[in-house]
Image (tube, rainbow over all chains, first blue to last red; front, top):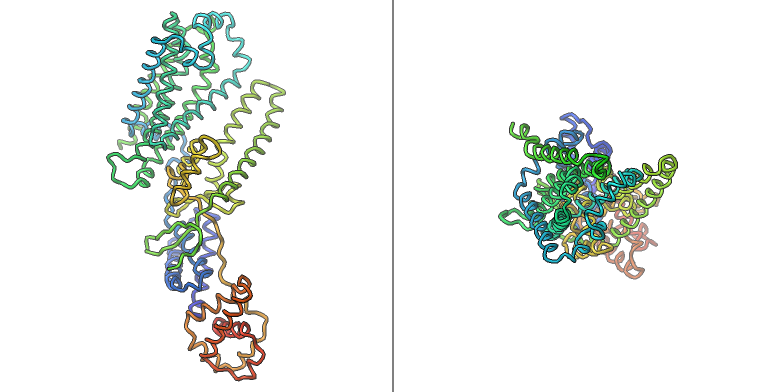
Length: 328
Length: 255
């Protein structure tokens, strides 16, 4: 025993020193000899652990050696650095749209659930107009669209001009929270995500019917399109990510263990969450600084044209972004 | 093989076939870590409030917007940034000596950090981490929903020290060392198991109840005496515990 300890102890101390160095500097630029030496120390210590494992009395020693082996293992088998680290632009323009396309089925389902919700919202308001106050958020149920249009025309953007910064920040943070929550609800086997997508569709459908029925289609398009053309797809993408998470959890058509299924979708979930956040920041700025200004301040035609251009650009971006790189 | 820890543990095996364990963090230490983190975020929010109040004095709307954005950034990014930069630890986790690691015992990736923290609001449903707590209680490795999605576990970062028997044996006269030939015979005849038990007993003697301590050392001394018979005058007046200590010094110290 004492001979074992005498010979082994210097190995452990040297390994401990190397680990301390590695943990303080995770990218130490070691040469081959140093790396081989570290691996040899790890193997020797592993062998020592195997020798003392049967000695129940050597609890302290076993704990110490297990700790050394665990720390070494974590350094030797650590996964490579994130590919997109430090390349934010490339990540957003390539990795994000590519991740969206990889899960096109979940994206289609997300859109379908939202549209279904919108149809339900339209039908519900059509069948029961008194449900307006319940269905419409943010006080829209308290006034007719025509009354709002008149108020906006008289106000000429003065009210919003005094609080654009605060309003913009509130929109960004609120929408991002909702989007992340929709994504996270994928862990309820996707059920929570489905409810969130459907519910958001219901609101939009009800609002749209309310404005169209009151003859305010142009105002509606001018109000919704500039920011909604980015905000609504962002929520749909968050829903898509939530459905991907739910699918990985359930595992339909995939025989891999749940742990490996979730591990496989993890990078795409993070990429999509990040992309959604960027889109919502843009939408928040547009909604506060552009969407809330109506005629006569900004012509509806300009607002609608801007919204249509954004829709086309976003569609092209998600359809073709990073396609050249992934096909190489 | 006897478990190294009394509490739940994560058993792992390296590609070389070596098994090792990591002790899992308990619910109390995790809850305390969350409470410390809440305090840390509140302090940061308070600092933000004071700084942006100065900005608001010049431009009220810009100041209000900045407050909203910075508060959001702190609440969402606090755990993500600290766990990323401190390899799985927040301020609370550092204080509680716990750490988030990959389910395979490896350091966590940034994608795992992001996902486990994005799912935190779901774990908090309907309030006070009820859903996450229930899921963790039902999970084999104490994983909340965020941990399950990110393939992470929270472990204790217990620091085992190399057994310091040199310190244990230092500074005491050992009459048995005056008979080197008998000491050599003791080294030859003592099994590694007996030597290990004797050393372990000495290192843990303060943790033993008085009666158990006397009984244990009496038995160990009796076994060691059977191996080699030292002259009566050498061991005269030595208690059983002193006898075992002297024997362990002979067995473990370099000659």
